Amino acid sequence: MKIHAYEAITLAAKTRGGSSASAVRTALSALLTLSVAACASVPSSPVPDLQHQAQALQTRRLDDPGLVAAEARLHLPTSADVTWTPDRVTVAAWYFDPTLAQARDTAQRAEADAALAAQRANPTLQLSPEKAISGLDVASPWTIGASLLLPLLHPGESAARRDIAAAHTEQARDRAALAVWRSRARAVTALREVLLARRAQALAQTVAIAQASYLDGVRRRVAAGASSRDAELAAELAAQGAAADLA
Image (cartoon, rainbow, N blue to C red):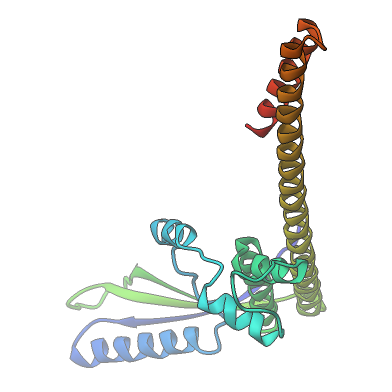
């Protein structure tokens, strides 16, 4: 179990009169100033607005000005009517994918934590009432005790914390890079599935047209007595199956 050593600096002043009260306030102000000086802190993140995020998802467009600007910087076509190539789909995925923003935020947070680990640990200010029994006739026996706790780390502990924070930062950066490539893989896979689905739809439509034409020919042959009713039924079933594939 790791034990931290603390050096306690205790100040006490008796609240007898105006000068004593002023001394107490001065001492407390000095301690408070000392406690917040050189303190390491990380700014808090704003609370996400879920309703705003939902509206942003609903209003996404492929002609978004930000996306158009990103495509222009990469010398890609910027019109939504132009054929969507894997590169254009990748840029759109990187622009809209929320996991990339999360990965970038995580990497930035890790960098902030690394900067925090490199700074001095925060001191702790403690205030507590104390009762002084001196035998003197005073207005109030109560005083205010102030303690400033300064954390003292073990030798090498500060360097170890910095190394751990640096490792976490590198890990967050690697995860951000991995998120970028995973986003591209998902985008290209989705594009391939869309293209294959469109191709399959076109082939199914061609088959349905061919089966309908074949059925008309069989019916004419049946009417002319050149084919049997069984051939017509088989052609009807094939035409119905081809039409069902279009649904």
